[in-house]
View 1 (spheres, rainbow, N blue to C red):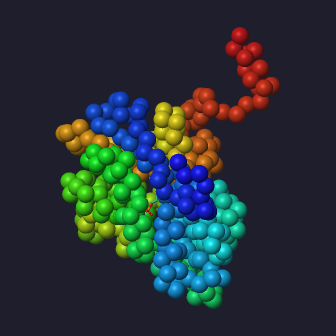
View 2 (tube, rainbow, N blue to C red):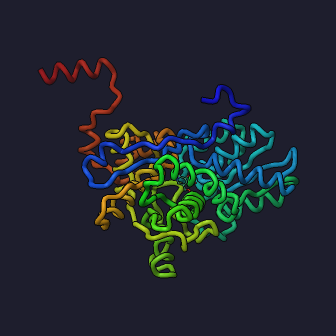
View 3 (cartoon, rainbow, N blue to C red):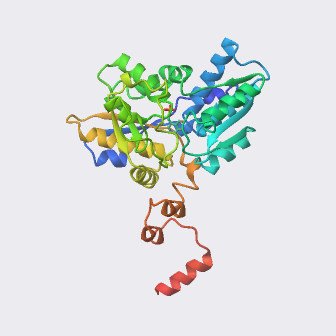
Length: 351
Ligand SMILES: Cc1ncc(COP(=O)(O)O)c(C=O)c1O
């Protein structure tokens, strides 16, 4: 074990692989989770934040005293803010309104400015979080637009770190990897590395209903128009350069209900407090393995922590308000906060 790190950035990566023991017991397949919330910023995006900034420095696109600008659903922002803090850059992030309060608060805690943009506007609309980030970059001297959706330093980082870690941790015994795609960096980078090791490894993308990626893969065009969904960080309304569809072997559509139910199951049954994109990826993995004859080892990417979603996926009231939980389930939930007074009144009523 290394005793002391030079700075927090050196602790990024080398995340644990955890066997999903409860789920695997009920299945003929073995499911393993790559636990990315172990990164210091709490998500897989810490990895690519380092590569995208260090490569920009190397090229001279980002100079001392410069400003990092990015359109982010939150996690990339946290990774970039972490890198910015260590290296002394200011950060400005644009983020759609639907992202959780916790994500906004954490970016401000790291010292970043957060600019909120409206939900559900077309990517080329002047008020989309992409367009606003571009405008801020043009107006800010010394600004560098990270551009995670099209920046090759994003998938490259997964090619050089996440992919090799998966191969090593599984000792090469991996048949399938499953994850969501936001920028596509994670799945594309891992797919490239793992397929170079063994071309038979299947790469499956779990896509929220409302994303257009599934249609682009199977129909080469948009069949269902982009719709809104509650899972954050995955699915797209445009095709990022970093989604390398030629490396993927299939897509599975997953609903919000399936993703949120699985996310809550993961903490209750496996003790893993992860975010909804992890639940979504695991539902995708279960759907993909239903079609498999042979017993398989399946690695599922769990991108972030459930702590960023305490006001959403783990808040019964929010779940009911968003049609993801029934009032009866909320009324009978065991995991609630009560005062001692209320508890004693209830006990008296029941005796
Ligand atoms: C919570 C969450 N899950 C999954 C992803 C998808 O990762 P990628 O952008 O590498 O496709 C992201 C990306 O921001 C994310 O924030």
